[in-house]
Image (cartoon, rainbow, N blue to C red; front, side, top):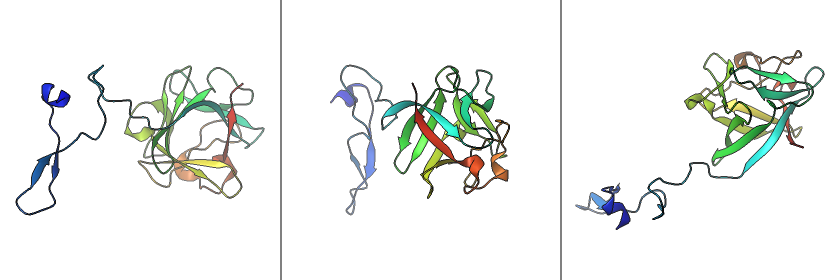
Length: 171
């Protein structure tokens, strides 16, 4: 009734014969307190650091200008929130200070922004490190160089140390 008052209708294909369409419940629950559906994030949100052991060891950071890199000692730009976006280990990574999401272009360039390129497949590797591959561009991995700079994701593979990250609890 509430959705009908808003003029919203949801249809699904019927299972039998002439019943091609039937009114169904929406794919989300709508509370009577507000008009918008719940936030699309479907899991816990954690503040953490992502540590890469390459070189002298770096914490991933997202700067306010969209630059991605690493810093040896954690700073305000290295505190991140990982959002579980879908089942199967699909996550979004947002810099707390910058407010930007980590994205990966089809060329493998990591940058801070907000677009469809900002979803990653999080995978636990055999050595218990975590890798992040672009959901939009399979086979492209998040990586840091031995100098702490973002490495082009098209030039690395999941078994290379530069793509291995350890999530660390933020102090």
